[in-house]
Image 1: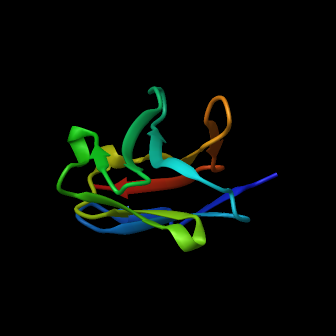
Image 2: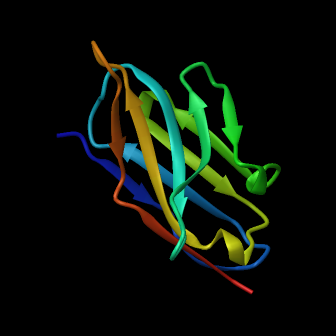
Amino acid sequence: QVQLVESGGGLVQAGGSLRLSCVASRSIGSIARMGWYRQAPGKQRELVASITSGGSANYVDSVKGRFTISTDKAKNAVYLQMNSLKPEDTAVYFCTVAVVRAVVNENLWGQGTQVTVSS
């Protein structure tokens, strides 16, 4: 069973930066898309950023210009550089990988990492 191992979360003051990492425990074949979701207390999980195998990235409006998603295909890894953090960015962040399968893509999820931004 492939695991996605996340790291990089923590406590930071508003205006600070964090870099989240998500690495697969082993090779997972062809990847269609990688991304980061977040879930704040009492709120629904939302897609923060995603990137296709071709390198096309998308961001939720609230993080555009502040967050950058990137990948390392050799390591089956996805990263999220978060700058100019705001208290409203506080949430548990989950990485996800859509693996290409014969019929339908398989979605893998990380265990989540807490990001807390203090004002």
